[in-house]
Image (cartoon, rainbow over all chains, first blue to last red; front, side, top):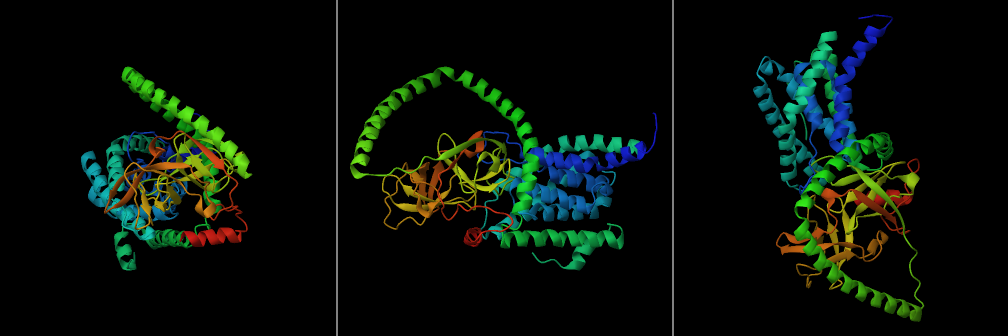
Length: 172
Length: 301
């Protein structure tokens, strides 16, 4: 490959920022109205998948400030109370980074199961926070559906991230 | 929601270095702080919201087109399969509607004559902008949609959002090229309504479910399942008589109303400016929130 000037460094920087850009792109994608014939809107939590995946495989590609930024972006775009997702994603990030050693070298099935478990925990946290903010006990059904959808979509999104990760590793 | 700092530190132990840990805890606290600040004064982040929405609107606009196309193809295939029976239903409905049209024409003429007799001054015609829905609400706990029409198209905060069938919500945020419509079944939506048959006033309060609830009905209410609910015009936010929905259940749980506008499957929205300066309808000036805006912020809490 021809190498000239600063190009390799720029290339590497671009590759390192790809996970963040990809995640922001997925957040936008989750906002697209799917016109599904369902009684409640279903918004897959792509950001949750992204933070889980990168915190597990290579936390330095999505550092805490990036997680914060993703959360704020999601809050603004979705018309949620600003700071809600930032807080929840940071909690998720903390949990996953602290449990990295446990997941090390485990099969994909275990990682998926781990994701489902974490999705339940942060779903409960989101429900509790929204209930407190609105000073009412909210119905749990919507968040259950949302987290189930997200858990079901995990393999698809994770596959895209695995490809991205490989391409970054190849060049780094 | 209190956290003991040592817990957080233990949890994040593998985050190498003090700086990392400090940054993490700081960001966590910042997120919580922003959340509470935004809760205390919803107008603080107005500018940030509209800016980000404006920047993302063109992307969402482009992305939502294929999504709509796909759903249209599915819908068309389904319709094709049901063409015959649908045709029969439509014929019957058409016949019924023609009778109604007749009745409406007669009433319209009569109404005009009576208005002329009384010297009644009709309200000014509403201005309306039609926008496409380009974004869904952001998750399980909000019911709102993003529409690709904003201030440059003449949309104003407080405008009524209607589909062909009825009231969908009201404009809660206006950017330059996009606006957010708070749906009537959102937790924060309160709409003054009246039962069409009995003229009883109530507030239609959303609770994020498909069927919002009627609050503050008189104790002596004669509300029945099947009653139509329309806007009452109180509070000056909406004009009188916009169709809202139909009462579907009366139980200990309260009186539930199924909105005419199907929020889960809406593609185009008409944003109507009725020129009303009600309590919800404030000019939004980001730099100097007017007194009205402050009042509104207080009222919403």
